[in-house]
Amino acid sequence: YRLLEDFGSLKPGDAVILNAATSTIGQCVVQLCSMLKLRAMCVIRARKDFDKTAAWLKSLGAAEVFKDEGSISLALQDRSLFAKPRLALDAVGGASAVRLAEALQAGCPLIVYGNASGRAATFPWTAWTKSALIVRGFSLRKWMSDNKKKVPKMMDTLGKLVRADKLAVSYTDY
Image 1 (tube, rainbow, N blue to C red):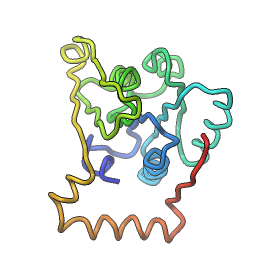
Image 2 (image 1 turned 60 degrees about the vertical axis):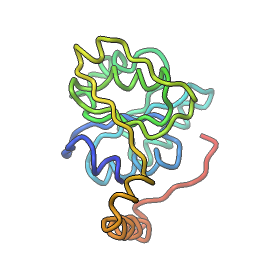
Image 3 (image 1 turned 120 degrees about the vertical axis):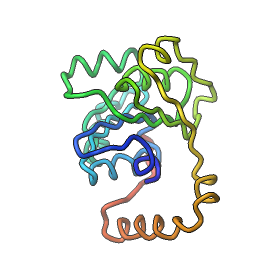
């Protein structure tokens, strides 16, 4: 919720690209994107059941699902999507974060909120100069500490979505 609310100045039709899309946070982001009329572009590990996992993410509201390998930027071009993503959400780090950055519109932010790979992203110099890459970190714990008065409203909003069956997460092996 905070990742979409606080970053990217998004409007309906904009694309958001995220890795670790099958995670609890990923599932929530995909569903929230769908509600907000944003196009969620999910990046997941290449696996033998990729097609099944992609279909499940699309049932949650994902617009596109990509394997976390090769060039996502080229895959976007191959699919002739309307515009590059305006926001990237990174929970993996390493090469996966670099792939997200390469797929972003120039001057748009990549928000790091996790590091499942345990590896730091090393961005090529062209990401900083040619693409005007913006990388920011996000910690929900810090946000809650800094915004104590806003926490109840956020929790109430999320609670209403859960009660209305518009936001749900499930444990999965995907």
